Length: 345
Ligand code: IPM
Ligand code: MN
Image (cartoon, rainbow, N blue to C red; front, side, top):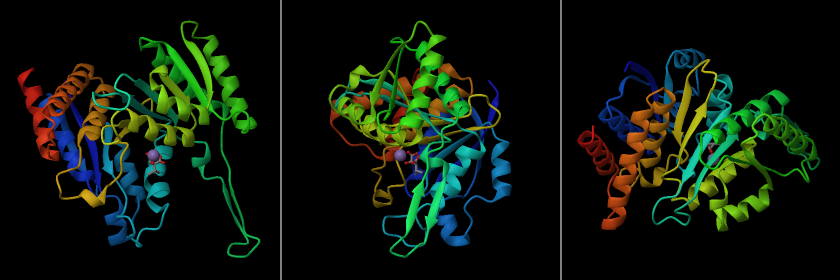
């Protein structure tokens, strides 16, 4: 096994704490990493006005992967306007590094609303309403106009849909559901629908289905077991992955991988949850989403066995926690997972 060069963006709030546990766990799984910390996020912006300096972006490109905790100011803080970090840091990284798949596995755990669900959301990550097309006219006047377009390119949709089908091929149920709103968003939805049909023709073993996004919300809340792989656009994927995360155990457990499947640069791994400033210093931050994100990272880097072992160790620790009914602190959970990995090495 080689040594991986990992850029670490701990970020704000609970981000640095959960990332520290994730790094502890991958080290315990025997994955060797050289890490470089990058100070980015709300605190850096408030202090220096920097969001993502060009030189830092270039340095990030030189790593095997990026592990990110969470970025964002405390609720009510006024020194970081909405959108500065989202567009300037998170989306800029996704766009510049061409991280066109946002993969969000949501697997139920004992005690969750949907303990048996095993869903993988493949969220398009570089286009849709996130692309930033639009603007304001006559700002501040009674005739103000705000437009916010949705960008959907055939190439962009196709590469994401193809990833979803290839993923479904590796999973036991071989099923892909497109989620969209084709009855209203007829231009974008029409393109997605046609592309899914075209790609599906090349995957005869995969069953395909289509659900409107509103219906998909009902199914995710009431019968989430019906889904295997969901493929969807950037905004629907954002919303559905919070819902799917919530029903499968809570977003404190939900990992994500922002992937550049062609590996023309590093991919970025981050928990779905945010900076949760309200619980900083309490030990209540659950590091499992970050640990599972790190497991996705090592798996993507080729260490499949280590990734699988980390996920098994996480499940064991979760069962123990459920059986004891006890709450464990952030570091205690990281220690327990790391210790279990040591024992079954
Ligand atoms: C997520 C987050 C981001 C998104 C925000 C913080 C820009 O909600 O990763 O799901 O909308 O993609
Ligand atoms: Mn989100």
